[in-house]
Length: 208
Image (tube, rainbow, N blue to C red):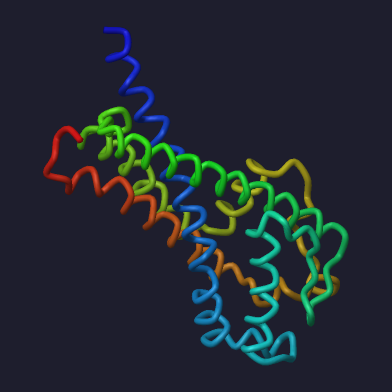
């Protein structure tokens, strides 16, 4: 009986963490083509006096640093990085690596339970999935309408310093990483999060 009571709690925690990790990593990976679109539209490459291809090459180097565990040196070929920006990128790297760990562990748990035919341990009901979906649907439109304040609040929540406040003179990469680009990244993450829980709502199986 006690095990049955614990199962919903385990499922909720598992799916909440997996949804956040999946949304975070998905948004980061998809930020590459997203940046290409925004640079093309906003022509921000002209601000830093370089080509779109060069911007994307440097952003690839940044993503490699942020996502690859054994890449411990940030070096963009055409964009200098101040010490404060380097510290901020390192803090971001730690958060992304945490998301990778959660995702990989969650995936291994999923495979194990699938093989043991114990998927019910991580299954949540349609009602629970709907509850998880409602909050972002309410928050996201307001966040995008007043993204500047949301972005500031988000950074105050995750970081305990002001290293995320880049100076374009010392960290010109910020000229191409515009507010609209970051808003697009957040929207992408929100969509992935919603799609994750929509799988439970669209599923015809009540028990896996």
